Image (tube, rainbow, N blue to C red; front, top):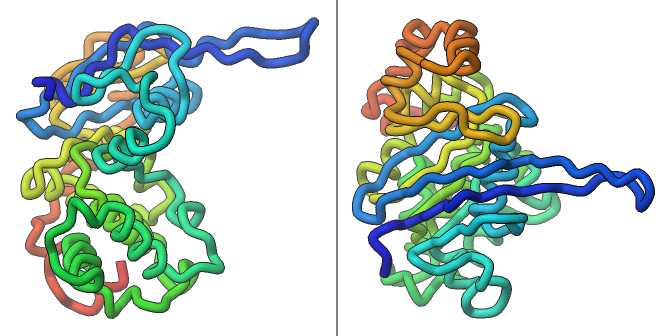
Length: 287
């Protein structure tokens, strides 16, 4: 096992657009490098506007896209060697995604508990919590729900915030080491985002899960992140301690983002105690 959970080594991704005679090469990600320590769980925010390359980078970390150049190592294993079969399942056990729109993460014609039990069965070898019902209910309670609230319900019967919690619970059933969350709160009402971002802090602090938080929202990144990387046109233009970079950005693009965000004021609004999130009042259960 490697001392590094994730090692991204000078990774790039180029797409080809157009026909044979009008082909155009577009470099979506250019020479990106960073590492996550296996012994120190953290939240790393990747920040940038649309087209900055942050989503393409996250898809390469999830092994959905293959780098054009460079290398990604997870637990010391080159992702290029992991394509299908048991090795792919083992990778999915350790690395789980959470996508932008929770309503697109689930088939509207399938009940949510079916997804949860299918995931639990897929990774049952790593589960020591008795019956599948116990395992699923315990995991749902970690995100502020219960099996009773989710059982036999379809995606449209839950709010966006509730459904995103179900998506997080589904990821947790795999007992991952790393979660890659791509714009996980952008489709949720601003008043409800705090529950999700507080949950990410709990996953890091209580469960020891590292999180790559892909976002254009500097306020939530400022609030929950340990480190940030700011991307522009496929490149990392600035990175480091989240509070330091966002309070005193050095790159002109970073300063432009900072000036547009009013970070201290917005971040203060997000500073809700975890006791509020864990409350069992009926109003919070509707998030």
